[in-house]
Image 1 (cartoon, rainbow, N blue to C red):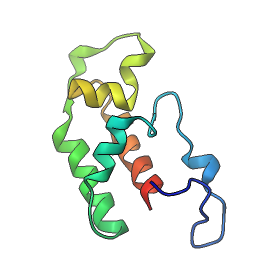
Image 2: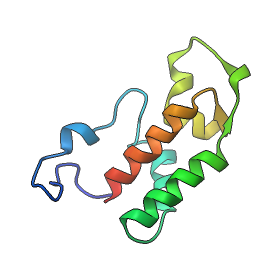
Image 3: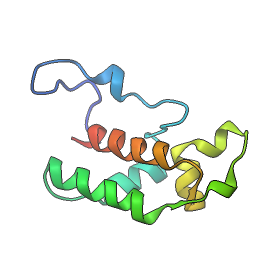
Length: 100
């Protein structure tokens, strides 16, 4: 993966926005593996990751829980889905940014 402190085209340091969080644990091995499957340029990778998350992770509203760990990107990936459709899409977008 690329260094998180890289600037975008406007020269703004995005490192603070791309750092892993408690829910978007993009430094976790399973999230990195998902991101590594995306090939091509930035747009192609973003599209690939969007579809990989949308089509590959089951949205299950019946799996609602109050356990914070259940909503981590790595947890959702390991279970193959969950009640975190929006968080999953955000994780894919974040992971794409981390790999560019």
